[in-house]
Figure 1: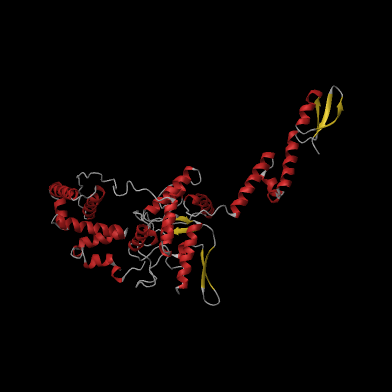
Figure 2: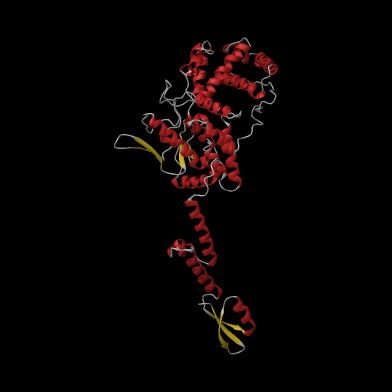
Length: 451
């Protein structure tokens, strides 16, 4: 999907030359907006639009709001806001939408050190009625959308569905920063003698480092990308190389098309979600882009219920503050052994995410065979040290059976090869595999372990 020049910098134009031009002439509003932007550009834009809309609908201005909030316990502002709520409800607006303006008023008055709290009740303010009945896609439906998507949108969808990333991590609101190749350190860029670049993944499951400035909660965290997602990423990068792009560690994971005037810049949130919506609509579905993050969460719910992943780890992968963040200080890399254990756990859970059934890999097959061997040898009484020292995992099945019988036989008689029993027991011992040796005085007999 190519974004035309007219689409560029729509937020900047909106602020400097559109709906908020007059509002931004107010120095206090400008300071408030810039203060909000330091934490979230998206929230700043939403709140600025909200303040502008409220002022226009209620025929007021930001300074008058502050005056009303500080006079007579804010009685006039309370009544005005209740009128505003009634207007919005009559126009069919949902509670989750209306409550946004309540937050805007609180933010504006609090910033200006005016103590004020709106008491207006808003029906269903905590219920997003547009998404409460939204279900997540099935594996088959996700696969259908991935097959329909272009190379870039295939990567953006898979990184949300397979890694749990928010759209703002892939590309922030302004398109000034987003996930870059340096954040996926196991992607290796190589340049041949002819100057041509190639890319490869050094691991089957790739680690993704989310920098604190890309994180909603403003802390560094990690997640992973499964084999299917890795393949999509490599295909996209290879296509960019064929288009004469020179990749570096600073190259964005998602960027504008070659035809765009913004080549080599990070694809902003608005544009990447717009492109995802077009893919979803083209396959006959109506999901929002965020449903792919919900898809990841659902897959992790299943994996957690089966004991494949821990709750604290899946929280961390989704950028939520949890046990991992309380144990390790934020913005620091987790210990390598923790990351590798996470990778192993994620690899097992990826079967609940991927849309392609690749069957069992050779390594998985070998691991399962070795697990059976270890179980059999330990059942016979061998220790981990004995198994490793004697190289038993490299033995074929017939040799392992002999080892099993030897150990079991020794354990049957505490290490002795012969045993004295009564004549009454001879038949029982013979049936168990012992061999008769000779009679023994006192109505007894000697039996021995099979040779």
